Length: 158
Figure 1 (cartoon, helix red, strand yellow):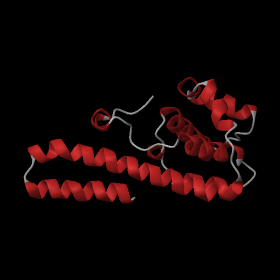
Figure 2 (cartoon, one colour):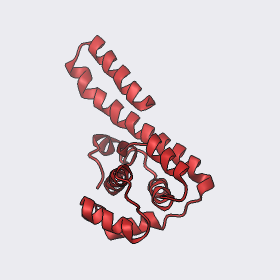
Figure 3 (cartoon, rainbow, N blue to C red):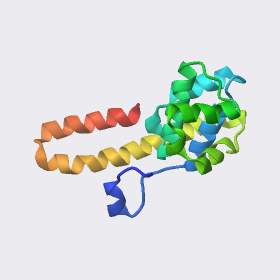
């Protein structure tokens, strides 16, 4: 499911998204479980669910975060069992889960995937934030509008 996007109507296309990179990052997270703790820590420490455009990817990421906090192993069949218990399997669906788990990734490329995902998330935040400023400009005085611009800029820079 795609997020509501008023700018899409104006520009004819959605904000930036790279589903292959999203799949690669989540696939790396799943496949690195218990094998490369440094990879898992780097991914979980550097991203939030808001960095993912696709709803299924946000649900998977959040569910995997919960599993890691509870020290649940996610290899193989345990991933499927966890997603069922966590209530995430229906939201993700088997086709998308299959795409994520079989996404081509190499541990050596993980840093690239993480940078790419963060950059796309920043672009999306810039588009969504900029679009949200238009109605605000009609409703606020200039000083309040400039403060809102600073808030959005800080969100994009995070």
